[in-house]
Image (cartoon, helix red, strand yellow):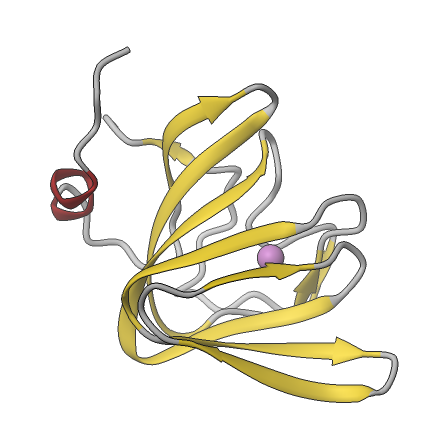
Length: 129
Ligand code: NI
């Protein structure tokens, strides 16, 4: 295990919606993702999902019992999507995010709408790939 520079790690890949695992923490992955445009509505039944916006700004649409709402996360913001909540991240201008979620968590969750071609269905790729 060597220290990983976030900037270098981000410079090391271009793929959007295709998370890279930069560290493991107990049973969790720390993942980096570049994002642009829309992800897909999906839900993680058994885990919350942590977002930290490193660059740019993202929106996360949420389907909650009271209705649908969208939260906006500028650079430097953190947000946790609760387990069992359908959500769809997006970024108009593109962004980079750091995600924390259990190892093995699928990027499109346990249930999802039709996955567009630009969204990678993955449990995360090792950063050195
Ligand atoms: Ni998610």
